Image (cartoon, rainbow, N blue to C red; front, side, top):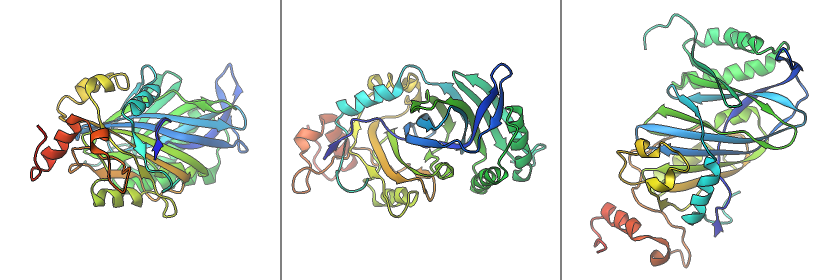
Length: 344
């Protein structure tokens, strides 16, 4: 049994590396030999059956100081804001407090007039954020080319641009047409990019894994999930989750614990409004460690999510109920299983 003391997980897509050619003019030139490494992807996913709030943070290291353009697909138009405080530090405290555990040793509309609509272009903290909606993939390449030129990127790798366009086209075919371009600076040493919050409408639990294939390599994905229940109790959910990851490596789901609004507020200050119609809220974690060769994104139907806790087996395959379950968690369990006698 292993305690989850580290942060969480996540996935962004980074595809262009550039370096200032003239700091006073803000012009950038493309650096072909710059090497970018994702130390880990960290994310906090909050869901209320109608909306998702995704808090993203990524550890990046480059072999020279450079600029990075991050590209993130979304199933609906996101609202973008800068996270206040340190949500990853706060959720780490919550993971410790709730004794979240993971089993050890298993795995490391109508026709549009323009091809691309700009829905948001704004400087948010250190991030230069552009939200777009792609209506016609055939006009997307030219738009990206012009967009990069507007950032002062004078030399563009055509092969890399084509790879980027192919990824975008794959998302369009699957009905995902909203994308975020996040332009940030990456230092030579490992740095944690200040997190942004993306809130968007979706009834499914969504996390974009496939875009990480562009960067490739080996890394760690840590997703902390704050949901109206627990994933992985139902067999079909486990199967769907595994389908997104490489066949040679599978992700692991942790135990879960019930959490309350006052505990979530330090992580996401708008949690009271976000979860106002949610009766039960559970904290859980998903971890993957291995190659960035994802087969699909996480895109899970959570309408039938189990509204009770999952505990890791301790002895002879059985959990210590009195030690691991709170009274609230036991009542949730028996409420979901009326055939059993409810705890008084």
